[in-house]
Image (cartoon, rainbow over all chains, first blue to last red; front, top):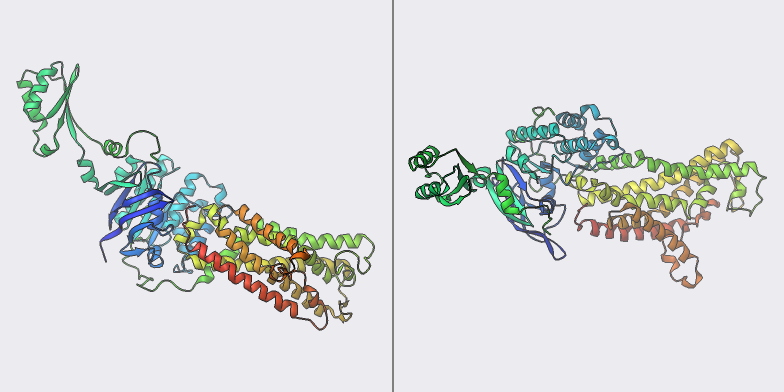
Length: 316
Length: 295
């Protein structure tokens, strides 16, 4: 039994000659909430399909819950709940009938407890009142909730949620977040993909960032958040003096503008950098008229953009 | 969402899936769900409704006109007025070339492609339904539909015919008269024959359905193949091919309406259909079990 919920080695998925996923090494610890980030078209959903045995890997190895996939698919999948590329249902069946059908497809699911488990899953996503309604009449957000309910039909060790808040209103998004938190608190590993950083930042313990089929960063939220730089910004009319003082304190490359100076805090100084109040004292002692002083940290979003590139263009 | 209800930990439940012991059995649940889903669909109900319309149309047409003389109109039409039961048999015979294959083509072509199109295929596989198990269940439910379709025609015909013409002993093709219960058995036998005739085509439809994510395409292709097979069957220049066409024995059901019943065509047809089922379910299996499900 390993302590990893998902492990891939050099996982590659090629469609003809185009590599949608290009040699990624995912490491998802058990009990973590892993945010799988990346812009549209970066290979997130393809990776998830391969992880769950819907598509075959061109190269590399996949282990889910400590077992090789897709070899042990029949033993692994009953322990995995998944929402892949949006929910999908039979529009002519009710919400509850849809869940009963998916549950019936699982040979290991008990028939006797089926109705109770379906009712419980519906209750958990707040759809009890719409259980008997045909899915045709569901809104996008309701379908999304039903999709999450389907992944909760049985107790799961791993939950894979691909863009779970798509189509949800702010209230629904909050509910999904609290649901993920409560599942994680119960010990379920949650692997959640998203292109919305803010959403992931709030609930995840770990993050992996995809760009153009490659995993460009992976680690705990603190590792990735802390890896970004920080800067001091001094608002002052005495730019040249301020720059001299800041350089003397070991801060790098001051950028002087008409009414402000921005200097980077070098990464090697992180932790041992002078305290903000000492910097201000040194500036005042140096005759700098300080009108404002702030320490700025790179947000995860800055990191994300730095890693995946700016703009709306789909990379490939 | 009430985020704090329900057990979610897995530590406190016995793991039903031990190492090396994949879940077995309980395919009955999926099969029941499949049949239920199939027959709950409006489309399936509409198809059966159209098929039920054929005997009604025939019965009413015959009732409103003078009794047909032997040899006039579709085969067996002249027996209709003797025994209402034959309305169903006659309706089935006229439906075999197109209506029945159309119905089967829709259902068989939809099996996998329809699920792929809805996106439910990925959720069935994630359940996990198992690709082989899913295919077996899909084929079995299509076979159930074959029998449901032919029984719909025969039973509707029996009810309508019985009401309009009454149920009397009837003279068969061999000249013998059979009782009403016996003629009912013969009508069911004809339904069974036509159902078996459609099993090969159902397997072809299943295979075509694994090739695409567009159900209408799979349906059209399957029906086209059925029509093509019948056209080839009507061209004497390719008579060497005829015994291998899946539609070759479709209309050879006259043997079931003789006394005693001649089983030759039933057996020959069964063998031919079995060969088609074996080949095309194998192809469908090879295709589905190696396919990337990207829908």
